[in-house]
Amino acid sequence: MRSNDGIMIHKYYEGTPQIINLSTEIGRLLGVVDATHLRKPQTELRKKNKVKTIRASLAIEGNTLSEDQITAIIDNKRVIGPSKDIKEVENAIQAYDNLTNFDAFSKESYLEAHRLLMSGLVDMPGKFRTGSVGVIQGDRIAHLAPPGWNFDNLMTDLFRYLKDGEDNLIIKSCVFHYEMEFIHPFMDGNGRMGRLWQTVILMRANPVFQYLPVEQEIKKSQEEYYNVLSQCDKEGLSTKFVEYLLGKIKLSLAELVDTQRAHFTDIERLNYFLDQIDMGDFTRKDYLKIFPKISTATATRDLRKGVEEGILIRKGNDRLARYQKQ
Image (cartoon, rainbow, N blue to C red; front, side, top):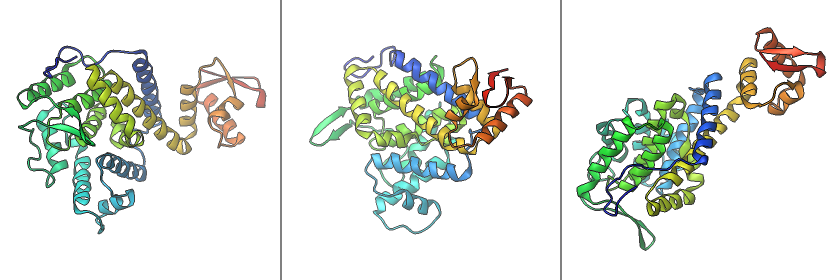
């Protein structure tokens, strides 16, 4: 909670059943990612997701370039468009190319990320603001950030929480994203920095987040994104924003798993299936409900392989056979 002058007091959010349930579901999906070796997706998918990430995060800020244009810039091809938009994309490419070089817990590394994102776009890239700043929506001030004399202390506290707090890194990434937006430490680029740094933090939890376009899910619900930010400003806690972002992380992970299911090996399909079900035993028909695009012959071979590898126990024969996890 905060006092009216913006000084942070004790906790950043309250635990809710929704946060617990979403965290559990994200943990389950990350288990699938690890079991099916999706931590580093295929090269083409990584490139596509990088483009989606950059496109979504910049589009939220009004950038007009398309995914095709961003792909062309990555491929060093000439693109026609507003020079500012092109510069924003070039900067974002450089920043996202350096994701593995950033230290999630370092304020200096955080400032370097802002320098890469905002170089040539603002007067002080990589520098905290020195004056007051507000967020304007239409003809009104939607958010007045904490005064210049206080925000550096708030950022120090936030990085201390990030490094030493008891919450898991996925929840910390959501809290950091919101609190950074509230503090608004830069004159410009706060939104894209919040989204980029959340990715940097998430990568500490699992490498797959380097290739996961969570920003795209935010872009799809941009109005809700701003509404939840505003609601948290009024409540003085980031609880609703944590719930919102955990939901977007879950959607992104689920989409990755669904996209890659078509490329699973027989053992990967079995591990994925066993992680999905909650039943004592099952049939080939149950297996096909999870993988409707494979043939019955493929399903039979998968289940036979599971028995041979000691993963499954079979009772009965042919199509009436029932299986249990070993």
